[in-house]
Each structure stands twice: as structure tokens, then as C-alpha cells.
Image 1 (cartoon, rainbow, N blue to C red):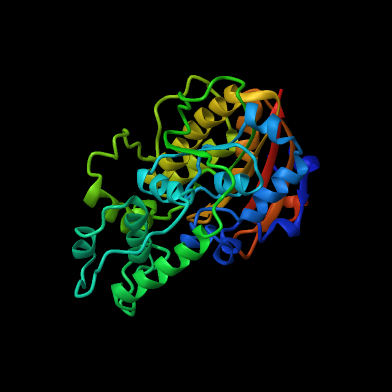
Image 2 (tube, one colour):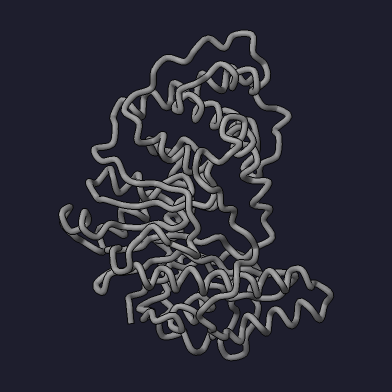
Length: 360
């Protein structure tokens, strides 16, 4: 894979700060919950600048992020008058994303004397206030979802969150974009050929505990919406159903076989499941994308138990098997130190890359 894709692999350090969520911490609306697995709103602006269309063209063929998280793409597109759709498997994140399109933040009901979030939850009824409580609870946890023992009192954090949200919603977005609960492997609510451009970042192949990361806001969300807020909740899983498109990636099978050999069957299964899921995702993206549309994906490589996994190149291989034409693999940064030596290719480390693809 490294040899095959070398000609289309370009190192672009200027993307390093755009493929992470760090930039979101300083910008209105995006700063509410800088999603650890997200990208910067600056990447959305670059995407729009490199793929110029009129507002009318975007309205007829909107942008899409099938892994929208807290809505970075949908929100930033709205700020620039661009119609967009966000799809996300975690209903709690969709709830927070939708709150960013509210027009105001009314005063919170009195919550004095409440030390537990459940006590506050029983007193708030407006969706925007419930979103504020979810964010406040999140801020009393680490980015990994663990409780922070040194966190300030809930009332103090909630007051700060409310002030921030009130300031941001004082300058409401000029456009309300659609954000919905759904599964990127089955984009059943979007017509074939309806999308003008895709910008997304699928979950990385890693050992991060995504369930633990999401637990703080999901726990609060379920207090009110145990039934899924009227929508079927779909959870991202390590393995999806069998793909209708069979694409073989030798690098994935090689990595899986080696993990099995060293006794890491669970991780090997995760690597195989990643290929199955990404095949389904790419097939769906190919179907909904218009003939002139572009698909951009932020993909991170991995080193699992010292096994090098070039996820960016694997996804490129899968994409071509699903009918895409991969124009470029724009390497933003190396993810792991101490690169591994690959003969004449020199030292290679897992990369975080932006894949640029068109319909074949």
C-alpha cells in the first residue's frame, strides 16, 4: 500500500491544526463541546473554499457529514449560508447539535440548592436548558469521559455554560441546517445523487473507549429521553452487518492475522470489522454523492500492539473498490512517534490524512 499510493500521498503540515478539534475551543457555538474525535471548523471553511458553489447550488445539493458529532460541519456551513445535513449515531450529540440552531437562551429556572445533576434535570424543561445541563456535566469530566475529582461545583459550571450559550446565541446562525440521528452505513433518508459534497471523519481504528467518552452526556440525555427522543437510537459498533460490496485489503488481513498470532483475537476482529464498516460507509457515500460532488474524509492510522495499520491507505483502497476515484491523500501529521522502517521507503509512522475522492 505504501508503494502503491506514494504518488498520491502529499504531506501538508498546514492541515495539522485543522484535522483536530483544537480550533473549536475558541469559536462561538463550536466551543460548547469540543468533540475529541472531531475536526476544526477551519477545515469546513477550507472545504467550502476549495469546492466553491453558490448558495442555490448548495440548497439543491447540500453538503453532508455522516459522522457529524456535535455538528461542526452543519453549523459552520450554516454560518456561511451553505445548506448541509448532519447524520450522527448518538442521539445525545444530535440533541446538542440541534441546540446550536436555537435563536435565544431564556433565563434558567432557579436551581439553587441543587448539588446533583438529577436535581437540576427535574427542574429544566426547555431543550436549550437541557442541553446546557448536559454540557455542564461534561465539563466536570475529562475528555476521556472520566469524572474529574477536582471539578468545580455543578451550579458554578452551569452558570458559566449558560452565559456562554447566551452570548453565542445572541448572534444566531442565518440558516437552520438539518441534523438527524442515523447510521452512516445506511443513509436511508438521503436520495441517491442528492449530495453536493461530503466532509466527514469516521471513527478511528483505535483502542479508545468511545462508550466511556460519550457516557457523561448520554447519561443525562437518557434522564429525559429514555426512549430515544422519538427516534430509533443507533449506536456505532465495532462491527457492522456484512457488506454488500466485497473489497479485499491485504494490509488489513495481514494486520489481523498478526494480531491473532500474538493472541489479540479481539483486536484482530476489530480491525476486520473496521474494513466491513468502512466499506458500507463508502458505498453509501458513493450512492448519495452527485456526479460532480467531492468526498473528503479525515482518516487516522494506528499502531495496535506494535502492528502498523495504515488506515488512510486502507480506506483509499476500499474507496476505489466502491467506485470512487481517489485524487489525493493529504497527510496532515504523524500520529505516533518512533516511525517503523519499511525498507527503501524509509521510516513510516501512522498518519492522520485528508482523503479527497470523486465518483469514478
